[in-house]
Image 1 (cartoon, rainbow, N blue to C red):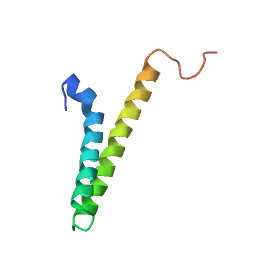
Image 2: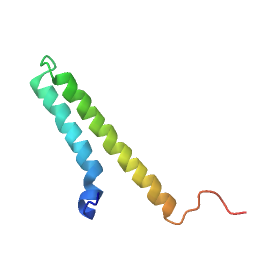
Image 3: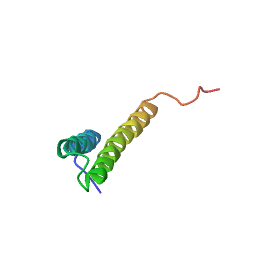
Image 4: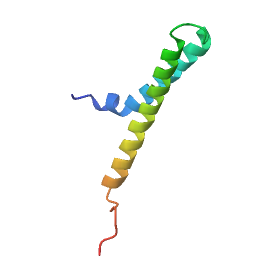
Length: 73
């Protein structure tokens, strides 16, 4: 699936923002609501997914940027 470049670049930040909003929503409605634990877990998962995608992209781009992984012999 192809995504436009601006959306592709913003995807990790969108995931983290969505996760933050979900956690803030749970804090607002309270933890005594039946589905609050599901939304809290979904929010934490979104934050971890966004951070993971950002880390993978950063690691790939620094490796690809001309820096060798090991010194040549």
